[in-house]
Length: 145
Image (cartoon, rainbow, N blue to C red; front, side, top):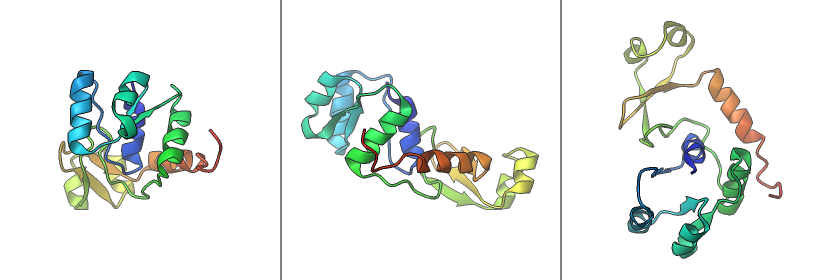
């Protein structure tokens, strides 16, 4: 339901678990056990979580981001801190270690690389990062939903 939103929350530096192959009971049990806020497009599932559940009204990403940003007073990290794929934490890695893990042009144009502790994916601040930061800047947190 909200896989893209979860990815964007990770981009913003937030610990966001996405449970696409779990039953509602398993999702509620995990969220409760870990003290997580449950974001969902399912009104009944959100209601089952009480204060720890939040119904996401829109199916449009920008509107979802605005809703969550406003409801939880989120502020994005300026650095990469979470893997967008697995939610693992990112650590800086030595530049020389990235040489055989990224395209040659990327290696030559970048001086900082990050590796996911969990899955090993390598990240860098390329032109895509500038576009991501601009997209987040365009989300005015004071704008009414």
